[in-house]
Image 1 (cartoon, rainbow, N blue to C red):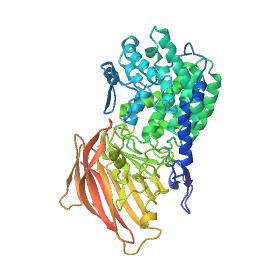
Image 2: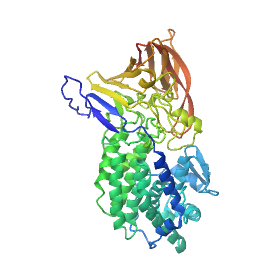
Image 3: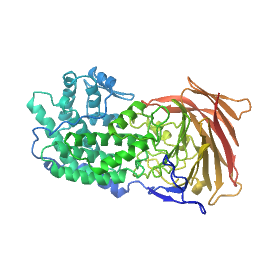
Image 4: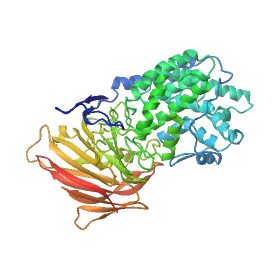
Length: 584
């Protein structure tokens, strides 16, 4: 993604304020709207097929390590309740469950997020939180033996994906005491040999996975193995070189991630924090690129949290809970404030009083970088303290447990709190899941004043098809009691004379927000369960209240409603204005 900055003619060069806001205009462009080419997909498929060949198996041979050179601490506390569930016979993630007594690591058809959770051994963190080593080792070792029987000998696509091996090595080494406490020397040797084989697999495959979080995870495992497996100095040098390149491709200058997914940014912070703990265990100076990426990523991550401390929902990600965000930030060791203005990954944060708004002011990610990217441009979420008011419908990262039809619907413009033209997406979503033509440029102007924070942004997603630019103006008062906006449709490009096009400005309400229309049909009272009363008013369209859904912090669809302002725009364009105001 590239950023082109443009200062308005005749204006002075803007100077950032004390909180990092740089006023003035800029253009934000998407760098590449194409997905992986056919040749790239063929090469990737061929590389995966080679994993099962005798040649690759030969390359995985090497000296058996007798021990690890250290056991790094896991800086991220696990979920004790989830760990107790494992001891009771059930591994869980969100709504998904699997019995430990009959767990088949190779079982097909599991939701991708749940399958990755099981294969990465991320659940070891939860199990470790449930008791002492003596308490939990008897539950970890049988599952470890089962994985070795299923996947320890053959490099298959299900379990040997490089990003999974990266996470697995971090988790195995951090929780080695509970998987290596057995007195069975044959079993212990099998675990260490599997780890060494996984490291050799990463030596040859880490740079072949998609750029972004997957490649960073793979190189993290390479570095961890280089630090903890005897004779790892060459691997460490190779891994650090690869990680430097991977982070340069994955983490934007403002700390955002190229996929534009807050969930993936959270996972990146967790992985890099684990890797820093490995360096600390070996008393080695960490790679500068890792420390730099963490220092930038944490404020960007905090910048997309709402008043309840949980994530806002963007690019297919759900509102992961505040405690997980807090644990990840604490593990990073970075102490900072939320980033209010991100210039590359494109989220703007407005804050006044106890009110917070997060706005998507950039094109969707390049299709090859954003798996499950969404047509969410100029959408926003709004909260007052711990109460969410306006949300996006969300997504099912990291659970990946929703029916395909729902997951696809959640990616549309209509599933976000933005204006939708002709019931179509601002960026096309193809049948194969890739993103197509649409928003390539966002023109953004942000101004900070004593009375309010203001954003004016426009995108070109509807110009090619309908000859209209969508411009959205937003303002949040300094005391947070009023959040107002105007949606303007401006003629651009070619358009047939006399053609009227329907529009709908959608404002999805958070669960627990009850909307009661006013008598004049131009507003609604928003009663928040246990929270403050807000009013909504609009002008320039007809207000209706429709059904909606929201994906909660466990990946469950929850019924809610949405405010919808509808109308038609003539050839010369039109505008609607609206405002949320706290009452009392």
